[in-house]
Every structure is written in C-alpha cells, then in structure tokens.
Amino acid sequence: MKHDPKKHDSDCMIAYGVDTFGDRWSLLVLRDMMLYGKRRYNEFLASNEQIATNVLATRLKHLECEGIISKERDPENRRSFVYSLTEKGVALAPVIIEIMRWSSSHMKVNARRRKLLDRIDNDREGILADIRNQTPIMPPPPPRAAL
Amino acid sequence: MKHDPKKHDSDCMIAYGVDTFGDRWSLLVLRDMMLYGKRRYNEFLASNEQIATNVLATRLKHLECEGIISKERDPENRRSFVYSLTEKGVALAPVIIEIMRWSSSHMKVNARRRKLLDRIDNDREGILADIRNQTPIMPPPPPRAAL
DNA sequence: GTAATTCACTTGCTTTTTGCAAGTCTTATT
DNA sequence: AATAAGACTTGCAAAAAGCAAGTGAATTAC
Image (cartoon, rainbow over all chains, first blue to last red; front, side):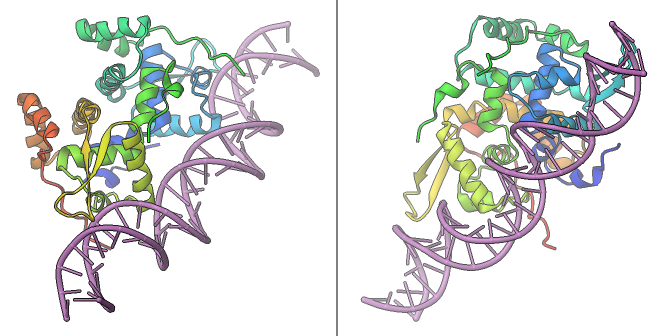
C-alpha cells in the first residue's frame, strides 16, 4: 500500500503533518511507541484511552501507508505482528517532545513525568537514541481501574 | 466559559495536548494565527482547507475555553471580533515549528517555505517574538483556484 | 431613518467517522 | 482434534463533520 503524493504536493507544511499524523488516535499510538515502547496490536488496544479495535486497525494502516511505521511478522510467534517506527516515524520525536513540554507547563506533573522532562532538557540525544532503538523512555501508566 | 480540569488531571501529557489542540481544524487555526497572523472569523473561513462554518465556531469556542486563544470585540469595527493567542497559545509555537520542520523533510519545499525554515534555524527567537506580537511570519498562500 | 450589507455566527439536514459488540481467520498450544 | 491467542473484520447505532440556508447585531448607503 503506497501513499499518493498528489494530494499534498502544493499544500502547506502544517496541513501535510495534520493529514499524516494529526489526529487523536494516531498521536496516541505514536506516544505508545515512543514513550512506552509498545509494538503490538493488543498493546495499543490496552492503552488507557480505550481506542476501538476497528479504529486502531485503520490508523495503523494509515500510518503504515504514510511510511511512519512498518509491520512485520514476529519471528518468534508467527501469529503476532510487530510494528516499528520507520526513520520517518522516529523523526516525529521532536513533535511529541514539544507537545509534552507544552503540556507539562499547563497540567500537574508527577514525579515520573518530571524525571522525563528533566531528561528531555539534559539528555535529548539519549532520548532520541532510545526512541530510535525502541527502548521505552518511561514506564507505561498503570491501567485505569475499571468502573 | 471555563475548562473543567478534572478530566485531565491524572492523564498523560500527550493525551492532554491531543484533547486540547490535537485535531485537524484546531491545528490549522493555530497555523493561520501563528504563520499568517489571521485574527478574524472570516479570515479563518477563507483558508484553503475549507473549514465548515459551524465546525470553525465550535473549534474557536473550544480553544477559547481551553485558554489557548481569547476573543474581543474589535474597537474599530464593533460588528467584528478579534481572536488572539494567549500566552498558553503562544507557547504552542514550538509544536507548530517542529511539525513544519518534520514535514519539510518529507515533502517538496518551495522558496517561500525554505526561507521560513532557514529562519527557524537562524532566528528562532525572532520568530517566537513575531508570533507573540502577531506579526505574520510568512505570506498566506494564494487562494486555491475554484473548480 | 429606512434599506441594504457586513460580520459572526446558528440551524437543519445529509454524509462520514467513531464507538461498541460480536464474529472471523490464522497460527499455536493441549 | 479441540481450544486458545492474536489480529483483525463486520454490522449497526451514535456522534461528528460537511453543506446550505437563515438569523441577528452593527454599519454604511440612500
């Protein structure tokens, strides 16, 4: 599945970004991959934000089609697939980082978050390296207690 | 109209950003304000992306309610309103900048865009100052030829 | 001073997208 | 051979987006 470049060729840079990854669920999937190192369908499904399974499927397809992520069979368990960030996907890290930086100044920041923010300021290269080789940069939040 | 903080208090930083400004139309309105210096309802409506008027109205209300923009009557034309970025809104500039930077490496970049990207690298402070005092940092694109 | 205009929206309706529950298909385990 | 895990698909209801037309206050034109 390949992306049709015609649509964007004369568009603005923000419009291109927005069309490619600028919706709630795509951004949350990218967060799951970059921050928590998630790589599997059921890991994305398990996020606290409760994405619907059909919506997750279409988002993964779209991100793959845009060249942000790639999909391969897990060699160790052939009924599973593994999603990874491509170079194009890894290059989105600064966007995610700036969103976190912005949010942090407008919401309560707990210890786990503070630690990550400090690292953003002091070890940006290390964070980018971790994202590139799929090392989680912060522990995933505990599952929200069910009603 | 005030935002209810309960919803986000224990959420993640990306989720907070996504809920606040992370949808197609909000991001395009922010672009219009930051890059092109747009400040009026009919200016937003006139963007090439063709936002529907009812959708624009709800987005402006949401952004205002989240404290990203503020709305005042135009003192020189009292049937008009002027929207401005708040400090919280200006603080989103790095997110917009990183989206542009990312997009620029994955799409064709014309001369106008190249000029802005150079300025992002060489005069970041100047750009942030322009955004803060509502000076357009690039000319708006020509209106797309109607069908 | 009344009529036409501008500006910023609303309203009503259709279409598209999302959300939810259940089902399918492939590969693996018992 | 039967059961289960993993990754989706399908069908349907609900919410959001898109479209066209209408409203109401402020302004200019006659």
